[in-house]
Figure (cartoon, one colour):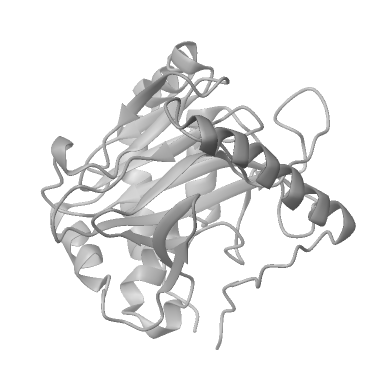
Length: 276
């Protein structure tokens, strides 16, 4: 099915325009901390709308796909047709041209292209003990024609506190120092993504808690840097995880080798297909 996005599109644009100048300034200034440009926009939607989105994350829905390895542990899905329509409405609202243009004004990154097939985006949910180790995202889209440029993360778990964990962490290039961006309710994070933008999610500590996120990515034909490059999603261990850091280098090399031989990779792709 296709989703009606007008309602959320207008709400998002209104909020982004309210904070546009401030957000544009912060997006650039935040780069000095770790070399990654990002900005945090709180209270993206009216609270009642954000709560409806949270409630639509049906944890018992069999459409959730468990991702579990030494690199990560979480639930994801792109099977929007099996959930309340509001989840598709908010996700694809971020891909509307008017929203895209508004975000381009904040980030000053032009000619961005939405991830309409959700190659990278979708819904994610993390339970107690779930985590995502430091990594840089796959540099391109499925066909290796577009560069991944911007990560949009919208968090909708009410009353999420500092001690609950599950927060976004941005790292320096050596993956030794980081800053934490809390996944507060109704918060949008815009974060650039390239071959230097290491990030992770700290382990969820909230007992019985569900950390819920709506993710989108934007792409572009132009490289975000001054040269062409390609890399698979590459992981690293935390500074204290010495053995994992070594194993991640081996794992990254092996998966990169596979992609060079078979560009589409070996893993099954879970892409969204709009149905009439």
